Image 1: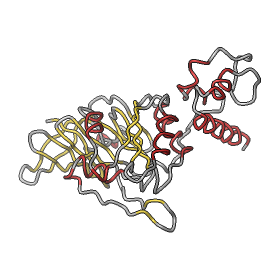
Image 2 (image 1 turned 90 degrees about the horizontal axis):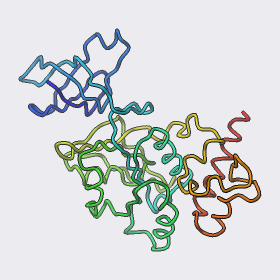
Image 3 (image 1 turned 180 degrees about the vertical axis):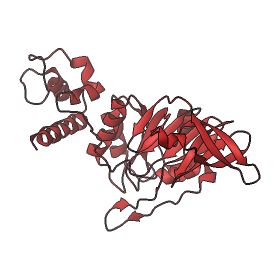
Image 4 (image 1 turned 120 degrees about the vertical axis):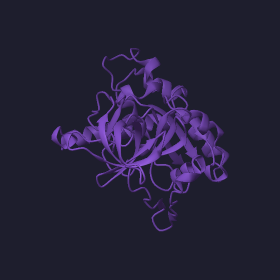
Length: 292
């Protein structure tokens, strides 16, 4: 019998099995011996040991198509990065780090700007213009108003991991896509202008037979830039690609050099100044990090 792990807590694994529904499982001892651990998202083989109470044992893990390490999740098809237009205001440096991290893991990405019902036309236009060439598919919506047809089409037939800071509406989005999830939605902390952390463990939520969405705890709690250094940072900005090779210097960091085609494209408006300024900030962060 086969199924997919949708949740793992304290050594218990909850496996979605087509024939039976959710089965509560332990992993057999060979996994500890082989230093292998089942992960949320894994397709597994299992044996039912108690049919009445739907309890079983995981006996094997099928080959993984992909894997994230922090948090540890398997077989993610794509990601949906969720930020709010306001309340809280978007931290664009953090947003860019998410896009870079996902590109570094070769995970296709959508970018969802939520709360468009309270956003000005100006901020919506600015964000659309800034990120239109970022490599991510852009969505503008209000999860509170259940304006989710484009998202449903985007996630259909895939495992999609949600990423983004707290308070931006990820739980509301999941609740509306999958009412059975009944996730706790966090209020915005007025004092801190950010959301309370409401996700406590990695979990898949089944939207339909082949469609899952995953929320994760701690996706913002680690260094998203990982092993990226300042010299290869530019490779994570698709907007720069058409201008590579056109600079006076090769290689060119596109920061301070004269006759830089990327800097010229920024001045001409062909590359978003918002994105370029974000690149400069991350370049400096990586430069300073290396010093210490």
